[in-house]
Figure 1 (cartoon, rainbow, N blue to C red):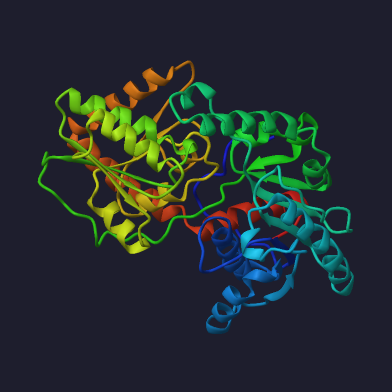
Figure 2 (spheres, helix red, strand yellow; figure 1 turned 90 degrees about the vertical axis):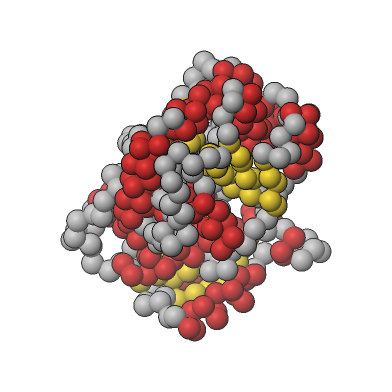
Length: 426
C-alpha cells in the first residue's frame, strides 16, 4: 500500500494508446467540482488513450457544444439516463438513491459495449467517493476506481460552538464512515477493482483492511494556468494584512476557526482584514459571530462571486487561509497558488497534499483543542505579518508549485501507476 502521493513530476515514456471506458456520472465543461473533474480528466485522458465516455444524459447539453467546437481525439460518448422518481434530474444529481439507479442502468448499457469492442480498462471516476457504489466490476475488463475521497474526518471537538444541526450532521457523518466498511453496496466496486486510487491516506484507511493493499494515493485536481496579472505588489510591510477565504460556508470549511483567529490578532494589535467569498447554510451563524466579536469593519461576507472576481481577490490578498476539516481535495488551494498567494491550512484531509513547507503553513491538529487551534492559526498569521521577506519567498514557491501541478500531470501520473499495475509496456 502506497500512502504517499506520486511526486509532482511528469512520468516517463507513455504507454501505447489503449481503449478506456470512462464512467463519469457527472461530466461538464461548464461546472466545477465533480462535473468539472470529470471534464478535465476526459480532456487529458483523450490525449493519451482512446476513450469511450459514459455519463448521465443531463450533461449532453453541456458536452456536445464543447465537443463540436473542440473535438477530442478518439472520443466516443454514450449517455445513460436514470429513473427520475417523478422529479427533474437536476434536482436529484446529489441524491445517493438517484445515483445508485443510474449505476444499475449503466451496467446494462456498458455490458454490450464491452462485448462489441476490446477494452483495456474500465475507469470509474465520478462520483469520486468510496461510499457511493459502482457496479462495473466483473465484466471481464479490469476495473480501476478513483481518485476516491470521502474517508476524511476531523475530531468532533473542532465543531463545538457551531449550530446544533451542523454538529449533528458531522456526528452522523463520522458514524457513517465507520459503518461504510460494512456497506455491501459501497464495497461492491472496490472489491471488484484491480486498483483503487485514493485522494488521501484517510480514505485508504477508511477501506476494509483486505482492500488497502490494492489502494494507492493519486491526487485528483490540477492547478489552473499561472496568471500573475492581478497580483498587486505592495510596498513591504504595507497594512492592513489581507486574508482571504473562499469556499462554501459549511461547518467542514473551518471558517469559524478563522474568525476566532482574526479576533485574537486584532486584540493583539495586528492590523488585519478577512474577505470571505462564498455562500452556504452557515452564513447567518458567521454573521452573528462577527457581530458578537465586533468584526464588522474587518471581515466581509462577500457571498458568491464570479470566477474573475474571485481570481482578482487572490491577486490582492497577502495570505489564503483555508482551515478545512475534511475536504478530500481543495480546488481553491491550487487556484490561490496559481495567483502567487501563499496558503495557511491544517494537516487534515486533502489541501496538505497540494502544498509544501516553502509555499504554505500546514498546522498540526493532533491533541489540539479548538481553542489551541484557533490560537495556532493566529500565531501563524502573526509570524508572516512580521516576516514579509518569507511571505515573498512563499509567493514565489506558490507559483512554482502551481506550474508543476497541472491537470495533465495529474492524469499522466495516475495512468503511469495504472499502466504499471496492469503490466502495460511502453
